[in-house]
Amino acid sequence: MPGTKDVVIESKPCEGFMECREQKEECAYRAPPDMWNFAPAIVTGTVLAAAAQISNEAVRTGTRALNQVGRMTGELMRSLFTGAGGTDPLASFADRMHSPLFVDGRPDGLPSITVAYERHGAGRPVVFLHGIGSCRRVWDPVVPLLTDDHHVIAIDLPGFGQSADLPESLPRDLPTMVNELGAVFTELGCSRPHVVGHSLGGLIALRLAQAGLARSVTAFAPAGFWNEVERRYAFAVLAAARRISHLPEPLVGRLVTTLLGRAVLSGTLYAHPECVLPEQVITSLRTLREAVGFTATLRAGRARDLFIGDIPDVPVTIAWGTADHILPRRQALRATVTIPGARLEWLPGCGHVPMNDAPDLVADIIRRTTALPPSAGRTGEEAETLPAFCDTSLNGMLGSGDHT
Image 1 (cartoon, rainbow, N blue to C red):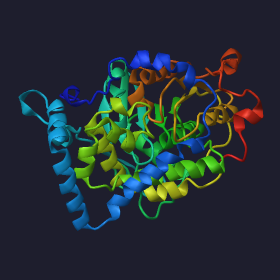
Image 2 (image 1 turned 135 degrees about the vertical axis):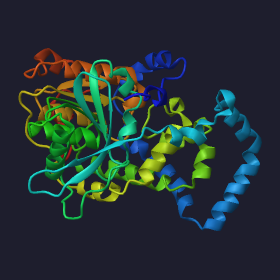
Image 3 (image 1 turned 60 degrees about the horizontal axis):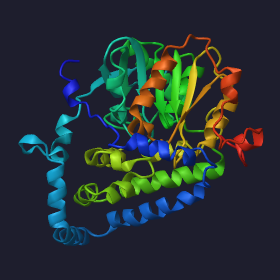
Image 4 (image 1 turned 45 degrees about the horizontal axis):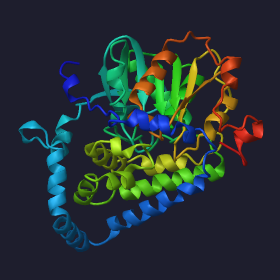
């Protein structure tokens, strides 16, 4: 699409990031801390989110006080983020958003849905699906790295981003979503594309492959391979993030100009929040706040058996960040036990959203998966190549409790 390259938001690690990551690699591969070590993140988020529920007058008073105290520092920080010619990216980011296209999916016997999407590049068709509370723009750091040899289609799932929510007559479950997206693929002219998904999108991608609607799947931290304790923890983190998203934007705008503020607002998502652009944090919080399908989708996620069975004759890669603070990395092992043919890729030092932490690595994994022949799977040698933190016994892989 003409004129799109000049508006792609690129996120690159800050200087010295690779050296820092190499120094910490040993720590990333050691025994993972118990997930309750991340409980302070939930407490911090809940305390911050409480500010979103105070009276309007208190918000105005607090914002004025904060402006007075941090005025000089804020102006200095803003000047650092102001480009040549006085352009303020915080103010102009919305103007640089890609204008989406829209397509109607019309499955047989079901109401139609309308989704927003973007198309870029040429080559193998690849559909990108985002996670809960997110949108297609989460893939922005990765898309430009693939467009030379891939026809990339990034979709806003129903109820997220710029897509309308599901019709009230439609059940919010995975079989329905698979049928609807299959109809969307047909309308887009790619009835069986490669599919890349993150979190919720990763789970949907795996279900699409089971239904014969995906040529290959690359799933980054796919949802659904948790036990009940892990599910409750993940949902608590997501609910806290949703409350944070309702903080007044002037307050958020002030917080994101500091490293500490970005760490508090987005540290559960990214392993390196200091490398995330302030406008990305603002936009992701706005997207989360405006996600009309968030609550119903979270409620539907309580269902058991979100994924069961194998995916034969379809190349599947499961990729997981070793510093994922939302879905513990041991869930990756459950996924590969459930899908014996899946290839397991660890993302050293990456958090739950690796597209920002390591876009080059993410793009490389996608490219290698889409190039695999249909019968490709995980070899015995690959199955035994596990990081040092992994307990290779079945009990160690699955952990305690049932998983859905």
